[in-house]
Length: 338
Image (cartoon, rainbow, N blue to C red):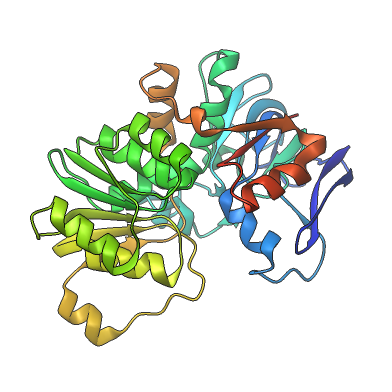
């Protein structure tokens, strides 16, 4: 079969690879219903993460189970499933505390930008629907595999409460999902920081009440103005740069929580500064598996429609164009038909 392979900076190929097979009794093989390019895929694509050998790409996935290992008990052939980008057994102490992304057997999914994929630890990673979902919900269910779950985790980590004021730093797919999540959790004011009209429109559609276009000190000043010089009760950092982290720290009020889910690149902290700011922080890889059943329920009951952020839909054979369009910010997120 063919699949997406990254060879180096901006060198993406859709080429022949061996078809995945059961390697462990706990594996499942799924036929993907759709795939996509993630914003985090752009870090190695741009050369920010070194690549020592050709790398299979794709960690967001949903589809139909076509084969299971002898040890798999909770999913079976013919079921439609969604899985987390973090592979987990869902039974270890960390999983039981709700941090499946720190599972003692943790792996990171790969090979999802392909027609067929192998999923390790299927019982702990995959969640099945009761019946085959309608075709129009596939993009939203695919989003639950990573970006929706990550945006939700950012809001959960930031302890968004009903009636609170929330600032979202980042207007990519994860940031937009943070806006949606904060709104679903009952935030009264959701401030989206965005300079791009199409992303601003989506943020408003997902529940933002304010748009701040400024960055740096000017952006912080705007948020202070909206909050009567107090700062936001909760901040979602969805980028991972020094600038975005500084923005998050300084637009939060003392005692606020910052949920940071942007993969950090070049981010450093000053201990004395953090001590005096009195902000709380928690983040890291999202434990998507914790949220998957509820998020899938919201999607299947048509309470939320995260899939509308897919603004580029192309055949998977043209995956290189999907990377290029997202890299050049011509697309928020590329949906790949398989």
